[in-house]
Image (cartoon, rainbow, N blue to C red; front, side, top):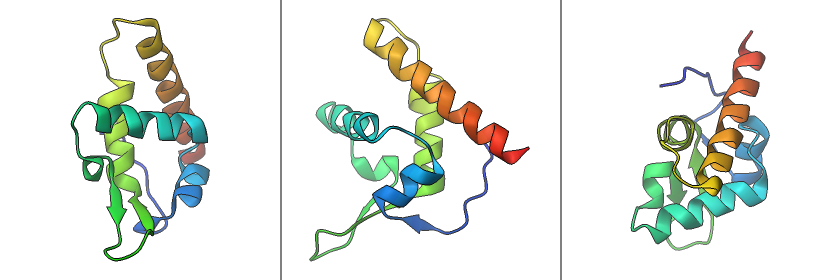
Length: 99
């Protein structure tokens, strides 16, 4: 697990992408891919507020998901290698911010 301190517990999607610098298109592509494989987006840190269309993200859960499912993934196809490269770049940027 990658150790990073978040300033608050939950973020709206735009705020999360400022803290964890994943391109917006990549972020939504990863969600769609995760869901298409039958996985629950809650495991990525997505929180739906009942009775509304409001969505929040749990930063530590998302970062852990990113680390376990993209950064450390075994790649077989070119698109998987691209996803891994993007995740490595994000984690590298966060490590630089920590220093």
